[in-house]
Structure formats: structure tokens, C-alpha cells
Length: 405
Image (cartoon, rainbow, N blue to C red; front, side, top):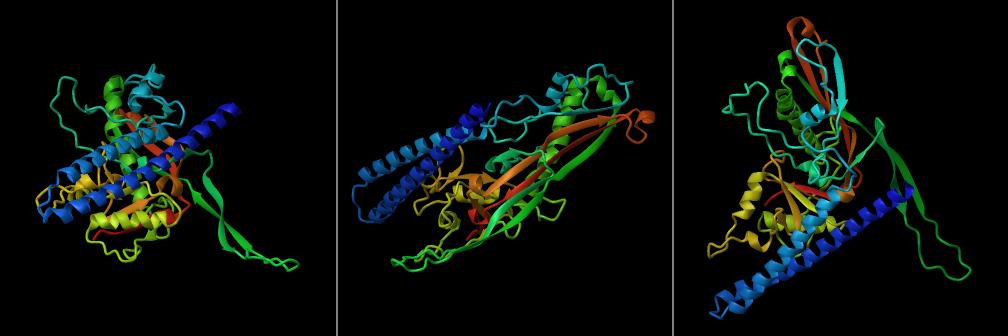
């Protein structure tokens, strides 16, 4: 067992090294491409033959796209490097597990079944739900359910498991470096270091619904009921809290909570004044890199990302191909996560793998009871969905938050 764990840790370490190397390569190729584009712009007014430089730009784009594709594949490997998990929707796995065996519409009691339902392509998010709704008769295929908002923020942050109610850590508070050159026979200088202890509480996200107990006699309807509304509601709230939680219990300590990031400094690169939001992201990326960390992603509102993609040059040609690429949206080599939970006009750049961690105490937990309130007398069933987790931001200088120009 110990050998297996050691091999697994080596595997994760190799993946992180490969990802870091690919980000450096994408930075280099992005810079080379930017130089070619600048040269093209400077020569357009001269009347020169631009065929050669256009071919070079196309070649750079092709190479950059290959790097992004490789990076996407490696990041997916990293996201599923958490051991074997069950597959299928939560409701389907409850049915397969036998949790409803022997239960019909006249049964009573309480049952509790905990299920790990992780999506292997998305670093811990739960499986997508089916299309049917619990209250729709089986012959009715025309009922339309609300469209669910995509939930993407969790996919950026590594997740770990905990069996504790509190995450504790010891961290460096101050370090005075007195190291210096010392002459023979002279006294050596002293350095001092102080540490402090911190802790983050595990918080709970939960809600419930009450329905007619007749749904228990139709297993597919129960599955749809659980998948379509309850689990999405919990994960929707989680998305908002991962970004905007204020850190006061029972809220999570969100990425945008004061103290969990460094404010964007548009003067960080001397001699450069950002002309638009694309420039802001590049400067913020360098601001993270200036903390000796490698920026890996950027969160922004969907509309802001659309504005970036719609930018055009003086000839009406789209500019985004010069700074984005690959199947996964990317900007300056950073993975872009467009989120409705991010305020329009704001952005958040970070080294997510090195700066923060999600601690899952409970994965999605589904409980149902006919003994809640007057359920037994009114033929009702109460169904509860909940999860417990904490967000730990242990390197605030790994994140930069600010306004788009």
C-alpha cells in the first residue's frame, strides 16, 4: 500500500512538472507570435510582400495550438488522478446501490446513502443530470425544465478529502534574513522566524424538497427528481461561495474574500500602460509570476470573454486567434473559466493548483424520509441534499483580482 501511495505521488509530481513545462513553452510561443503580429502590423503600410510573415504567423499558431492540446490532455490526467470513482448520475447510483430495494409507496422510515459521483473529466464536479423531470408522466415528452447554469470554478482548484471538522495549518508569519558574508573569526549574523497557527472550519451547504410519496414507486422519476433539482441547487450555491464567500461561518472563505488575493497593479510592468482587458490579463499573469508562482487560469464573466473574442483589428479581422487557442478557452496560455458568478468587468488570475485547496468532508449526500413532520399522514416524502467542505487559500499572492480596462 505504501509503495502504491508513493508511486501515485510520483505520478502527480510528474504531471505538475509537465504542466509547468508546457506553460513555459506556451509563454515562449505566445511571445514569439506577438512579435510576428507586431512586425506584420508595422509592414502593412509599406506595401511589402507579406506572404512570408503571414506563413510564419500561421505556423506559430499551429504550433501553439498543439501545445494547448497537449496541455488540455495533461490537465485532464491531473483532474482524474484521484483513484477509482463510481460513474453515472447520483440517482442512478442510488438505484444500483440497492438503497430503494423493497421500498414502495406504502413504506415508511428513513434511509441515508452517501455516494461519490465525480465526473472523471472535471476535477471532482458531479455528473450531469438527465433530461426528464420527476413530476412529468412517462408518456409526456414535452415538459421543459429550466436551463442550468454551467458550474466551472471548482474545476480550477485541486480537491482533497478530510475526515476532520476543522482544517488546521501552521504557516510562516515573519522571516528576518540575516545571512551575510562573514570574515574569518567574526561572529555570525542571526536570522529570526516566527510562525502562526490558523484554522478553517468545514461548512455545510444543504436544502430539501417535499414530494408525494408516489414517486417512490417509480424509480426513474425519483432519479430525475434528485439529479435535476437538488444536487444542482447545492452545486450552484457552492460555485457562488467558492468565489464570493465572506469567510464568516457558515460561509466559505471565498477566492474573492479580502485577504485571499493581491490587488491588480496595472503599473507592474514599467513602461507598459494597458490599453484593454487583454493587456490587463497579461500584466496580472506577470504579477503572479513575480511571486515566483506560475499563473494557470483566469476567471471572468461570460460577457467579458465574449468581448475579448470579438475584438478586431483595423482591417476588421478578429484578434483573438493571436492570443487564444485550443479546444479549451485560453488567453495568454491561461485556461479561461467564464462564469456567471463573476461580476462583469472584473477578473481573477491565479496559480490555482499552488494557491488554494478544496477540502471535501462529505461528497453529495442524499437522504429521504417519510417520518419528517406530517409526511406519514399526508403521503409525502422529504428529500434532502447536502455536502460539507472548506476552501483553503494558503497563498494569497498566488491570486490577482481587479478591474478590466
